[in-house]
Amino acid sequence: MNQTMVISVMDRDRPGIVADVTEGIGALGGNLADLRESVLCGYFTMILSAAFPADVSVEQVKQALTEGNTLNVSIAPTEGSLTEPEDSCHAYVLTAAGQDRVGLVAQVSRFCCERGVNILDLASHVDSSRYTMMLLLDLSSIHSIETFKTELVSFGNTSGLSLDLQHNDLFRATNEI
Image (cartoon, rainbow, N blue to C red; front, side, top):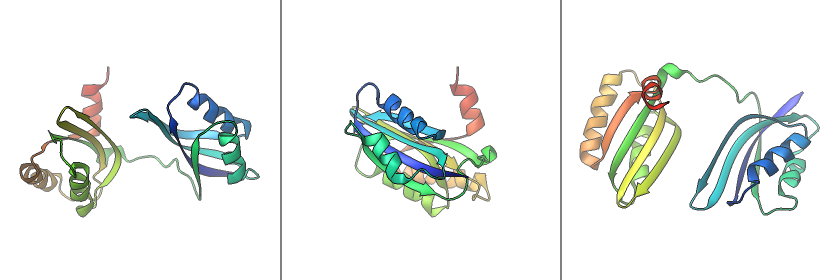
């Protein structure tokens, strides 16, 4: 019987981190289920889930990943499957742009939280003084998309943000090559 672990890795960016991590996991019989990686301000960050044989311990995984390098590794064993299919009919992309200032991500995430909206993915970038966020939202808890859109317009007006909400399928169709 396999066990699943969620693993996060961080270090100053350099070539070979993905190879080191995935080879370490593979050497222990681990099978990757999902992986996200990014470089942020010169720091490599990765989060992944992997299934391991039942006799592989968290300590063994951590040792395999940190031996001979400076990786900061955190491991959380989980119960149950992490590969449940997403319900794409409730997935929407929200883009938010405005003048850079302290608290923008907090404002947008609080707006979502107060409505029971889960943020599935978030990316942001600042260029000069312009701040842009892209959020993948799960709107399955929203009973009326029209009401949510109305609240979003009001929030945009009070927060000084330009907001655009699109169904994920439409966003992907118009933004992929």
